[in-house]
Amino acid sequence: MHLSVVVPCYNEEESIPLLVDRLVQAIEPWAKRAEIILVDDGSSDETWAAMEAAHRRHPVVRGIRLSANRGHQVALTAGLEAATGARIFMLDADLQDPPEILPDMMMMMDRGYDVVYGRRAERQGETLFKKATAYLFYRFLNTLSDVDIPKDTGDFRLVSRRSLDAVLKMPERARFIRGMFAWAGFHQIGLEYVREARVAGETKYPFKAMLRFATDALTGFSTKPLKMATRLAFFSLLVTVLMAIYVFGSLILFNTVAGWASVLLAISFFSAIQLLTLGILGEYVGRLYMESKQRPLYFLSQETGHPAAHAIDFTSESRPITTTPKAPVQKEAS
Ligand code: UDP
Ligand code: MG
Image (tube, rainbow, N blue to C red):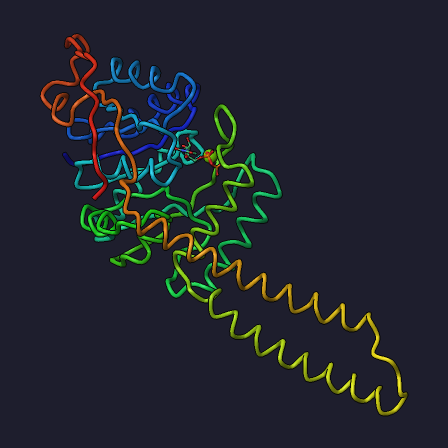
């Protein structure tokens, strides 16, 4: 297989027909040796039926269905593990990332790059809040992290087999795939594109999910927040010294009774610092705990289309398609 396309989908029943049409067009030059893998991330709508229909119309489409909703990054991982191509193209189901950029990415890869990632030159149809938080997040992440993670990128990218294999060797649960590719190294280059508005449905990343994603990225790629506790300790020591000077000074000069306001202030100040550092510690300990359980990342519950099935004559529309339900497949993450 030359090219694999991987698309994580969660409640994307409306986007899938449009997505598949545009993808099939975009992969035309490589169609004979290509596969499109749609991952149903435990959707509660008709996403799976849409995938089966897409497979009937275009045998180049394969569908895999996770047993429950595991989140964007795990769904993407499941698709990447199923991919058999020498080059792997990944994008979102909502067509915010234009598949038409693929030939340019392929050209870059011909020149020897292992990762060609899309860089968002502009984002259309997204709230000012989302754009502002995303802008700040990538900059903040880069000041904290030791890995140089390309700014304003998503998981929209074309990667080589060897860079994908490197990423798939990382067993971590809290997955920040764009960062993992950056960490893996190899030759990388960005290609600018305009991020369009969603074709249908609404974002699956509400504020809470964005926050969790950001914390995964920060804790996964930096331990600097932990070291912050030491700095805060020095800072509070300084404040304590200043307070002591003030307290003894006023005692000697004005012979005052110690005031409750300063006591209360000191207590709340130091409690806040302690709780903050405890919270940061908690984030890392919680993640250590989750990682230590070593549970599989996902289970497959259904599959449609087989890697080699269409390779023979998928171009003939008249080919009888068999989509007999298979026994549930269980797969452990490596
Ligand atoms: N997605 C997923 N599982 C989830 C949430 C999202 O597979 O739990 C998919 C979603 O279907 C889409 C991609 O991840 O293809 C990106 O999600 P979305 O477009 O909602 O994010 P946004 O572009 O708004 O940041
Ligand atoms: Mg989107």
